[in-house]
Image (tube, rainbow, N blue to C red; front, side, top):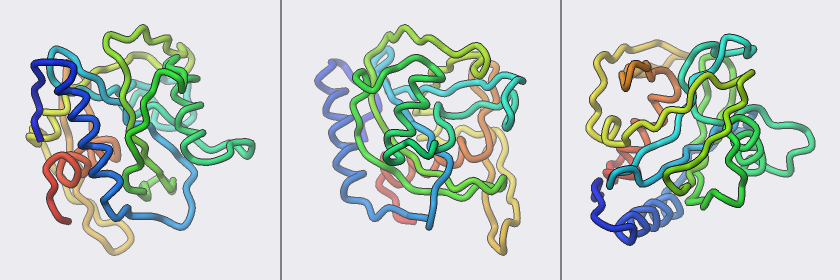
Amino acid sequence: MKMHFETDDEYRAFCLEIKTRLSEKERRTIERTSLIPASVVMNKGGSPHVLLTKRTSNVATHRGEVSFPGGKCDESDKDALFTALRETEEEVGIPATDITILGEFDEYFSIWGFHVSTFVGSIPHPYPYKPNSLEIEACIEAPLSLFYEEKYYKMETYHFHGHEVPVFYYRFDGFEIWGLTARILTDFSRTILKGEMR
């Protein structure tokens, strides 16, 4: 896919192509999901970027790590997309009305025991984030090209439930992006942006 845009129309075409590819892809599913991140993209300086967050040391899990906005399902949430949008607003101050949903990506199982659903949306740029200071230390706009070109500085293989799982480590602007966040972005780049078969 084209990863640089001369006009807003080219970015809109990029988002439409992502939406089409997500709808046509056979999505990997897991029996239940309890953690719902939202992958939010934007047109920054003529190229696609993804919004990530650095978590504070006050949160219960993944302290100080870089992750997507998102969190656990509440019993009152009507579905996983509702959770993703609710958590995104609670964590970084982006209401659902400002997010154009492009589709749902694969589900994952994390080494921490979370079943994970992932959604992809687009927001305007620049955006006035309002991070929840108790949960979010920083908002990070990372270029998708980092993952598209697989510019990780290290890759390790973990053995998990009888499977070999690649763990990618990326660096951007002083932040380290690794674990499930890096895995999702690498998989998304390979299967949706590049159209590779697994």
